[in-house]
Image (tube, rainbow over all chains, first blue to last red; front, side, top):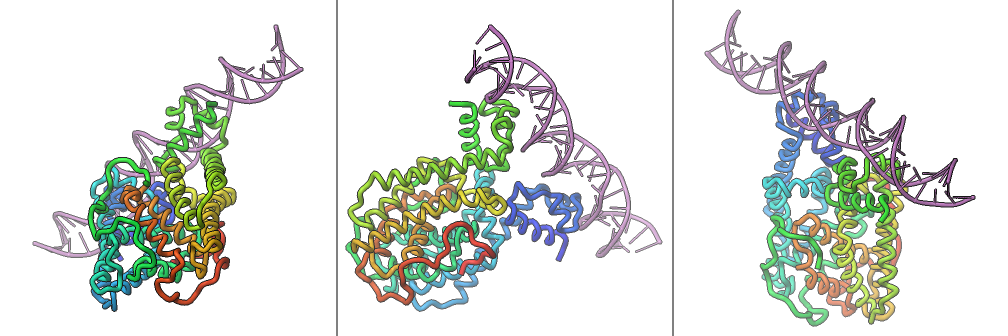
Length: 222
Length: 222
DNA sequence: TCAAAAACCGAGTGAGTACTCGGTCTAATT
DNA sequence: AATTAGACCGAGTACTCACTCGGTTTTTGA
């Protein structure tokens, strides 16, 4: 492993565990055995290290999902949805550092002023949302998922749930694994065709929900 | 408003917007008009300021929920669930700074070494989870919610969803408000009695899911 | 009215901090 | 063997930061 790679690996660990601001170059130097001068020989700034890592994360996450989808055959769209959720949870466990970084605030703060960062984060979250939606759409085609669902919105809601569970897990609030069974059951109840109650009003199938690359304007839920 | 309160208000804003580490006492001093010496006259450290704010947050959140529950009458448990979700989203919008702080990593990092912080966060999240569960239990009593649900686990899943949506909103990834209608519909599908499909296996009604005050040991979802 | 207490001030202070720079070492190329 | 380019070093540099301290002003209450 080259010294540059060693630096990147250690930085990934530190950024994940302590955050960007609280990671010092001195510490990174001590941990890797590389002199501070060497670090700045390979990277023009601490932010540059972070951006390199984020690029790797984006490529890694997208590749993992592509390989997974390519290497699987799903009985139904509903089956795909359940497996994708499971795969996401596994991925978050396997690449803990990546998901720790994604669940810190720094990337999103940086995204406000750094358009490359904004695009990388957008690509990552669109990858997630697209795959969730793909499962829903194909489930609607094969009849395993009810037709009167706004697939993008439901994809985002399900992703919120799963990602929210990972967030709780990361912050040591509770063990998301213990909820897995109920998560899958709830998911089925939302998606399975036989309507348990007459729908309220809105339906439709896609679009008018903005894609991930960052909303403008203010916050405020509802 | 006393100078101490002014300092706390400004610090709340800064910690929410920029994070704890990236907020400097110099900036807090400039923003409030209080000298740095004055700030350290009222608080023994920057962390002390943060802990005071967290205490206020805990009390505020719990009070808001108690007042809300006390001042409302719900037709059914299901109705209560929907209203509580709605109230949570409104609360997050109204007390934006609090929820920005709660969705940063600093509190949870601090919780690892500071037991008071750990307890405050635990109290806040138990408040949320308890109210979600309360709605489910009362819905099971009045028949508006199916009986074969593990109320604690489903409460945590629903809370994950709502909280996950707030997280996306805070990080400018998408407008959670646009998902509100579908959120409520999905929630009903999970909870409404008429079983749309035979249950898979586990049921039961409560407990064996650890309460919020922080899990020990490692992470790993599933 | 006056003394004690509390609030307030802001110029230090010392411990970091990211990043630089002049130089050495290594390895490939000629 | 000589040249050269890139990897590597670590002492320095300019700066920022949380926090202190000696002092002044304001408030309190007897």
